[in-house]
Image (cartoon, rainbow, N blue to C red; front, side, top):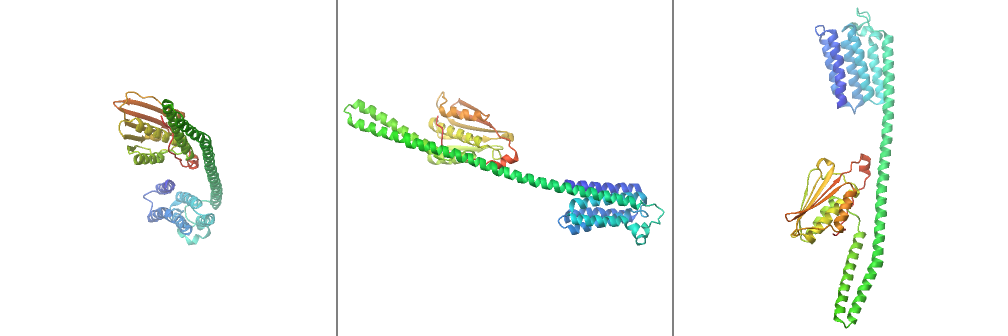
Length: 406
């Protein structure tokens, strides 16, 4: 659209200068009608852009209007010079908008209109070479046409080369995106395989040994006549069973795919509300849905929310939690989790320390506050600014539940 108005401004300038040089008092119906017909054809050109035959007809009609209105005998020598400018303008439009074959044909037609007063003087008596107004030399017109043709040919070659380079760039970019996706998928596969290996090792070694230890402690408790020793053995058995349960939970977590991002947060909230009977108020502020998260950022946010919700359910005085996200300006993602708490102080356990380290490793910050019976966790993470190729290459954020207890 911008180029259309540029071309219209050029055409208007040519005709305005021609009519001013001729003299508005000297310009007759022939000049005004030719100007109107020329600009009318220009206005209709965008409608015929996909129809080269119609577009060629419009260009030739505009050329005939310029020939009729501005050639010597009708408008003087000044009008003839502006007519040549109009022809160059039309030829440029033909080179830009028409296929090669139609562009050559239209250019030849415009050249015939230029030479028409020389070739057939009797056809246009008003434009005859016998007019009192001298005409530009035919050699000048031919040289001008040759230069315009060479310029148009060079421009078309350059445009085709530019188009080929763009196609090559798009192909390379597409291949880069494909390789990037495969690389990310390969990393995810290797990471998941390693997690599965660790889970199997824990299940096969530690799990079986804890089971055996629990059975031996129970057998020893049943065999001992000492009541005090039997009670202590029962406590040890319960501790071994708790360790076995936590080991199985860890194995289950390792067996799942790593998860992250807002979708995983929503799934976690739904699960907790359904299974733990907790009420969670979840709000999304400005810019959150359009925020661009890397895979590590998505996992870090999910882990932070998961750990905060776990602590809120474990230590909170009410089963009501408020979770909020916002990303003002699209440069930083902020999240806040708040719950009621009757404790007067708190201690950062392993889960909170791991959360803080994970967020700070991404350049973010984590703040904890206990005031007026409310425990508040606030976190900020700078959003990644990636180019278009990396955005398309990045695989969708993969999310997972579970990890982390304070």
